Length: 195
Image (cartoon, rainbow, N blue to C red):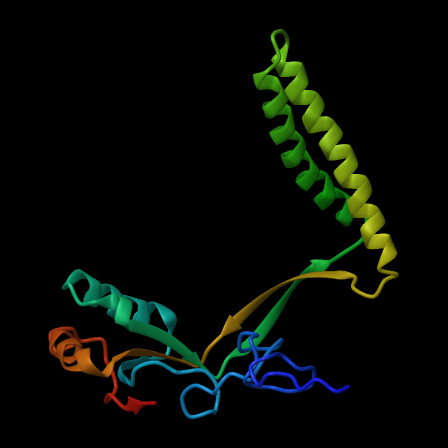
């Protein structure tokens, strides 16, 4: 005897019409927007373009000082470049020294925490935490560097740099921003409409 299932009951491998919610476990949700990804928000207008970040920041600060709704602005860096500046050679001894410094700070924190609850000789508890932290930090720093097998024998600092910083605002408040910026002379370029 065959039983026919009701059209609203969930059936494996069949999407839509079931009692499960839309999404990965149930029927497919209808795409939102134009189907080309997430919504991008309201249209924006570029009100200034600068070669460095402090100039763009100064412009937004000026807008904030003049009661412009700065929550409707953004600073957009374009043509990003990753720059890794090499600071020096890394040896096992230097790794141990850096680890000792980090461990000493952590040990000081733990020593202070335990020192609060110590009735007598709290200075000894703090110093013990500092020394123990420095020793363990040095050990872990040296071991961690030795385990790299010489693949990275240098220290460095990375930073992102942009060649241009644009200040954009929502299109419906762009005229207000232009009027305010007319009083400020930072060398902004002609505003362009962005999508």
